[in-house]
Amino acid sequence: QVQLVESGGGLVQPGGSLRLSCAASRRFFSGNAMGWYRQAPGKQRELVATITSSGNTNYADSVKGRFTISRDNAKNTMSLQMNSLKPEDTAVYYCNADLWVGPGLFNNYWGQGTQVTVSS
Image (cartoon, one colour):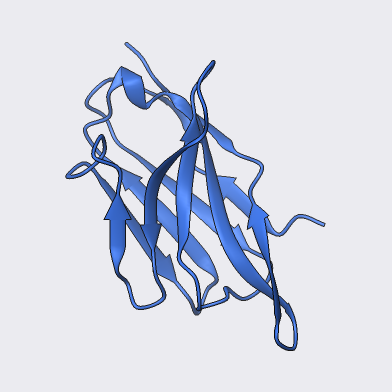
């Protein structure tokens, strides 16, 4: 059963923008931060951005000032607005979050990933 579904990836020219969305089938657990990660070919998965339930954000140095993470707890969604995209941003992007699975229980989930390609 899929719990997190990403969308919004695609091909974009350098300098362009994309908005990624992550929809959860369950409520977000508010005790931990959630975030976006990416994995480029031949590289390890890396943190892109995280956001807490109170809205505190954290970004990788490589995306600061260009990417913005947000969340809508009422809709169980999380987004990543990516501006001024560079070829080095090319990767598969994954969302990650803790979701309630029962009274007092939560599990950590990864989405299936969405491809972002920045190329002219």
